[in-house]
Length: 453
Image (cartoon, rainbow, N blue to C red; front, side, top):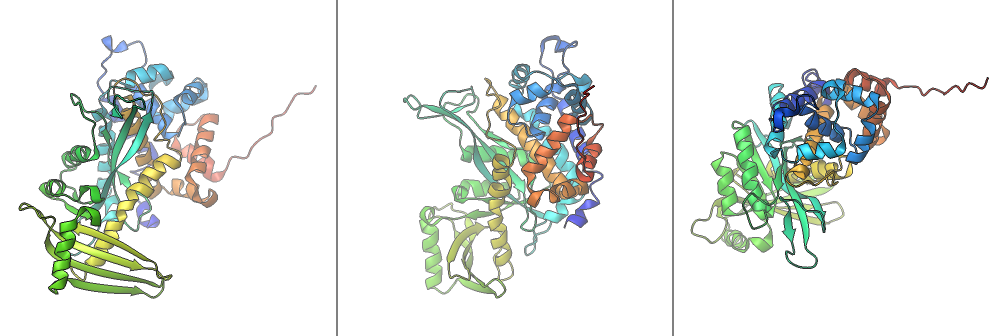
């Protein structure tokens, strides 16, 4: 798959991706009195923060210390378009970014995704199942972002309110386009799960997904999606919402939450109206067993959605059994059940290839760079997600990035991030081509000659 995607690297190179993102930062309205015409250009705050996240700094203080170096200021200007080398200090950056509406940081995601679309990179992610055409799998889920027993802002949700162990938190809802044969993902702009303006109750995933899907539909109105969700969302309102946007769904159905659905399936089984399909993989020694039915009421309500139900059991070569159940609106046939099973299991890509990467592979998504009073924590999380999006596109399309990653020990990304930052900190660079050339061709360390005369 790598070879097929390399021809798009000219249009999706890191230089152009960052340039397009920075053009979006230039459009953020300057709310400062008189726009501080003699001070730091307003867009430099967002550009500097993005550079910090893209360079995987583990704290704003570390970035503030380094940015005083003329080498770093030069590289921030040539590689991240920070105008005139004017980089804000850590306190000033927090103060300016805090009141900016998070919606302003959605713009770069849409811009970069349009580049992916125009260059036909989505073809590698197309989900082919039955009569579906130009359809893409999109798992959506929530994750923890911030938790503290002391630090609090106006957007914090509150746990154990009024009690001695009262604490404060932010969560985040994310989604991305995935494919079972792709190791990378294409993320969309996330949605903050925070206390909403004027609300007295905590925000939650069920409310956040309504906002999230509405954003995706507004920003990508012609995109045909199959939404992958866990059992929390296997209910009438969520399914109705997805169908209202013209999308498909594959949602986990858990036994404890869908008693009437199980009873309906058992009744169909007793009547002999269920269909079965089995596959044996002799090479791997696994067996796949499917039981399915179409047009089954989701629950006992008079207004229940009719769904298609797929029960699946995998037996490995040791005899261990693993079971799943999904509800979907995609027709279940002997030809489609395996594809739907594979698609449904792609839901884990949002955990394994997105959230786990952001938490454990150098992005520090859970680190508190500064909490602020309004939107600072959310805005910095958006910029971290944007840095992740740039890296994912590079991993798919850039031969230089792929070579640099492949030649690291076992392809460990965190080591590559350190190497990129090391060169970024040490050498005057005119652009990203120079940086990757330095990585891939190697820079031989020199020796300091001490004058002993």
